Length: 337
Image (cartoon, rainbow, N blue to C red; front, side):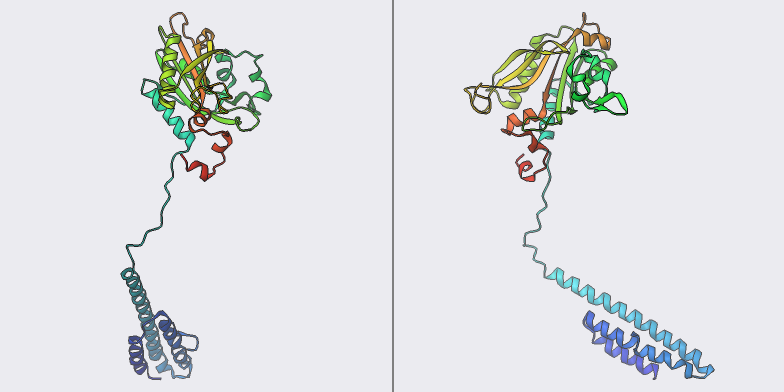
């Protein structure tokens, strides 16, 4: 075989290649196991010693030229296909919609509540979810005989018997009052944990927002004014409020705070149990014993505190009747908010 004739043949055939299939056939013809280059290589042993080196170099050169030619052809045909696809692209067709996520309803309510209080001077502070028994109970005037200090009523840590998953966000009161001197106005959002059986109104983990103020001359009327502002901002100016006497170890006097039912406007319905009122939070004046534990003089300073469940506020605001819906991650439910 004359290599020069083969080269001219290759050039002529390459001009007529228009597809990737054609390139593959061309490659197999010349570079395949039984191709022309393989046939040329098989003749080398039959040549004289003087001819072998020269002929071998020519075969290698032919092989390299074929490889470069095939690569260039592949790039050219692939490029033409891309250009063809671009030229035939219909830019008027609708694209693939990308769904945009949004905040979980619990996060939305938490941010709304914190925003209301921050606008009237409260600072937002967070605390650890694993707390000491002192901060969670003793510092808040909760005695040893209180039921919540029993192991079956609280998530104590096995290897650290004096540590537990906090049962409320109130321990931040103790931390903040130890770290800073009055005046203080603090709002505390966060998760809390209680070994409650899960049902439509209870969960072993839920979210709270705790708030408190400490300063000279703080009165119960200040507490009522702050909570009325909060309730009307969240539920509307048309709601009414009432305070019912209650007991909390860390406040005295203490009260449960209700609002008029946002569904029936206080007339009585299934949502409010025909009472016309909905409980939203607990509150009261900070107990002197709490001030004693954190080193604040209760004769110079007074303060109030309040706490609410975020899930409770969200359920009332949006008319949701099952707390479990917040944690099931059902997109059909979450998309509504």
